[in-house]
Image (cartoon, rainbow, N blue to C red):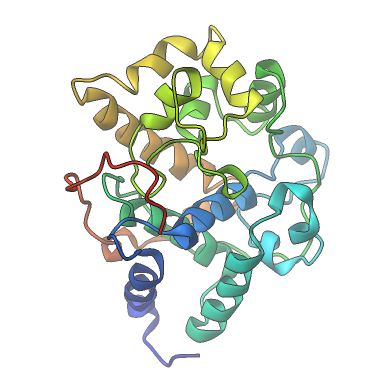
Length: 275
């Protein structure tokens, strides 16, 4: 473990992750995209109904790495490599695993060209207790099933749209997997290259009346869709990253160590470049 003053530790983590998450083309690479998915899958395993019934655990507690059973679940298949990296980085820096997972997730987003800078708070409590299984959305679920699942996490249909994951299980869901753009919304319902995977649940969500109007706003040709998406994604993911965190008032904001945004990127529209 590095002997570094606690207040500075995240700046060192940030420098390492910038190298780890940037591909040869300066796009975000497969490790960055896996880190985003890891953050989502760790935080998403919380239920307000279960919490009210006395099972208030899961959520952003690091258990996806610390509880051996979780990485064996089908929902988490494809995350084995990033889990190994998290264990290595945690030993190197001595930070909490729950915090490291969420820091890596928001760092990965802004490492991607066009991605927003999302607020990061440190101080979550780690847990090695496996979260309840079955709390993550199925790629083949109906719109009602997915929306109900997220409402149980206090995530509204509006916010659910911004937690749309365009790299589920490692398969690209748009033609620019290394750029944080909004093509996934258009290519989910429209024409897309044959290499793109479209999951039934996402197609169903795009057609649902609670989401369809705003879904189309994300890919407006005037560029407003990107700005709209980035601003609301940042807010929605901050909420998601705090699910199951019961010591919010004791967290410390460390957002300033994250990389700067890259709102313009030459060649952003080039298709199927995957570092």
